[in-house]
Image (cartoon, rainbow, N blue to C red; front, side, top):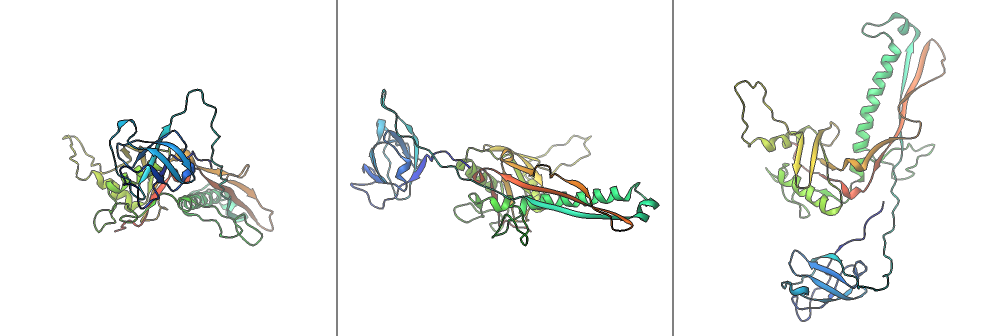
Length: 335
């Protein structure tokens, strides 16, 4: 995984000389993010500061740069780097970069055994022309169900995740891999919901979408929910006046696409999303991938008697890029 150089930091200073409006010596949390020539905006203020020197985590700045209005610095205040102004004809500055971090997941083998006796194949049971083919199809449906469930909820072993003769290998699912953008109603600055504070509301959905948008260059395009939260989303339009003509015979109470300033999202229903959870995903950064040559297939097994047997099997993993481009809300009411 690769990330861009950060363009935000925060003030790490309790007292200012002479005061927060006029101080030109500022201590920040991560001085390496700044360089001489940066224009910096404190918080949401209209003031722009100009950096003239960087020494460790200590910055020297010009306050009210370009006659911008004054503001007051406080400890913990967010600082946004607008951009750097290079000097005409100057030598190239030292290169700056971020280190790539290797992220990985593990393949998981999904297998189910099929066995049909010679008699069952010969008598042609009612409703199917070939019992062996019927059993293959049924087992494949079950494995596809399990694959979807593991893609959402799966977890790799805490030790020896690559598997061994005694440790089964399993993949980390979507929920397991989201760490940056986990939200709980009313906790950590995230707004409370409706009802007792945990009902899913548009306020919560938009707060999550905005935070994820702020965290990354991604746009959420998919919201995945279970039945309870899907009904909550459908209820967003309950108070909206709906008009019908005399010939209409259908009542629609369904939200399949949710459009906001931070993305147009398909709303998908899955049985396997926990009832108290809503997933916000960028589908362009997610893939379910088979190991080469190991997509679902039927593998005949040696016969040891009057039966035909085999395995329906496949080996898959979840490709999950830029975990901070996704998010979830958990702890929602399930009533």
